[in-house]
Length: 53
Figure: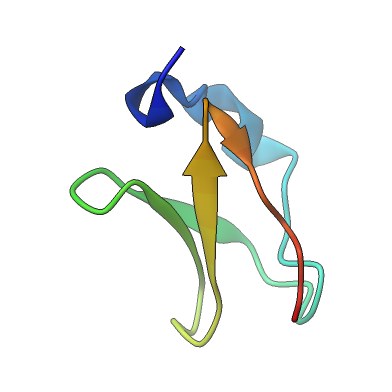
């Protein structure tokens, strides 16, 4: 599995853990991005890393 294998159907269930906003998938960067663009989350081996530093 690689970062390109993220299941986009999960976007209906996921929200940003910091802001509570919906997340969008950026295909080019393989990142999840909050609605306002302030938070980004990496996808590692198809798994979103929703960790707030």
